[in-house]
Amino acid sequence: MDGIINVNKPSGPTSFAIVARIRHLAREKRIGHGGTLDPLAAGVLPLFLGRATRLVEYLQEHPKTYRAGIALGVTTDTYDTQGRVVATADASQITLSSVVATLNYFRGTITQIPPAFSALKRNGRPLYELARQGLATEVDPRPVTISRLEVVDFHSEILTLDVECSKGTYIRSLAHDLGQKLGVGAHLASLVRTAYGPFSINNAISLEQLAEAATAGTITALMRPLDTVLALWPTVILTEAQEQAVCFGQQLALEISNTQRLRAYGPDGCLLALLELDSETGTWQPIKVFNKASRV
Image 1 (cartoon, rainbow, N blue to C red):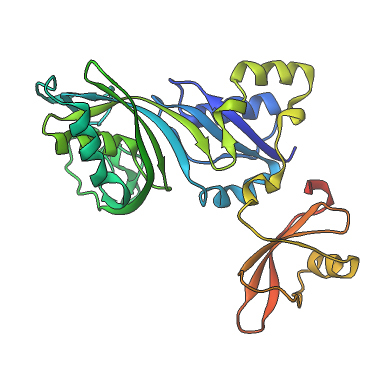
Image 2: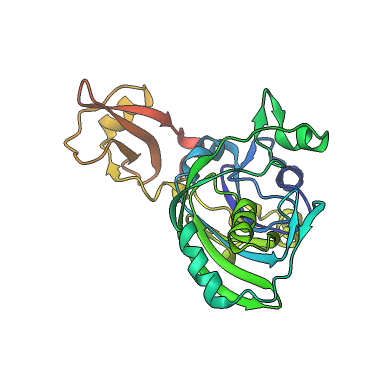
């Protein structure tokens, strides 16, 4: 069972719990997910089954889109609704125009400090474990890119934003930092991932639909092919002789320029391998090869 399922994660369970659930339904041990969602968050959670797990890393090259509900005037230690309130302020005087102006500080490539309550590790331990024990831990800032940041609604001190961002972006930190910039504090009240690269919430599969498909034996019909996450890779179609060489791990001489990587298909049109240019020899080295059983 090799492919990708675009799961619509509900708010509540962890991403790991969703993986465990699908592992049981699909009877497939090899499952990985593309990008953890906090228990509070809902929405797009692509799951990679079987040999598709070898392609999880390439999904991270794609942007993510979220719809975030941000409550102004209340600051929590976790930056969301699950934390302890550490400060309150009157946010009734905050106007839409001031919000729109402040959002300019967060567009483009910015430096962001991840929340102290996060799964990032320090000396092998998740930061949230250290934070729960009251151990102060300095979190290093990191560059992230927010390519789109738009107001959807602003009502009763609840601000709703659409955010398109790069990997590594914490929407909880964005909510917290926006509140600090406005001078009243804020926390993340709700979060839905509406898209992740080629996967959209509009065609995501619910857990109920997956359970029904498992009962009917039709889970494979819900799966997307492996190359769904490779849309950013240029394509090459190989001859039978080149296909055989790739299957033996041999390098190829191809007249292709302006790229360092390729997705290669066999003469039958099925995904065969991922190729990477060897700059020293000018030839193309197979870095991942998919045998007949796992090709799409």
